[in-house]
Length: 93
Image 1 (cartoon, rainbow, N blue to C red):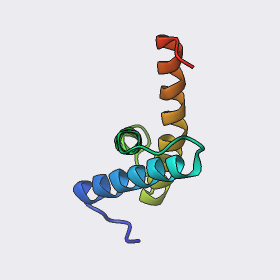
Image 2: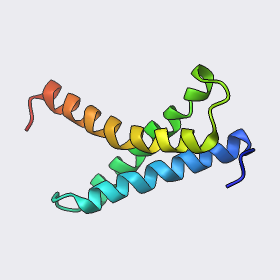
Image 3: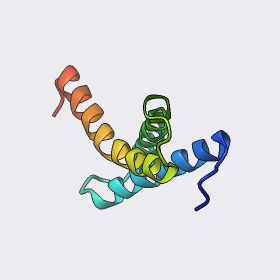
Image 4: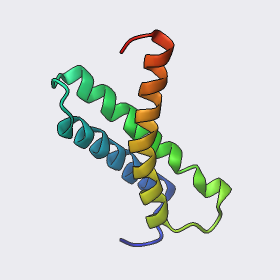
């Protein structure tokens, strides 16, 4: 991977990475598959991965490969955190 991606290219990479992580988590889970769940997970994971790109503002000079790695971790752990928070707030199991 070249290490001089434009902002637009980096956002696309982060979004696709988040989509793949979200769909991969759904396929690996025991939950019943539904398109609504798949699309929802993909959107949330993509958003979290893109948000991880904001690390550039806090850690200048961070390599793009490190940003992609942190974005994938954010997509995995952040989605689980948000899901548990939502279940706790709504009282559902």
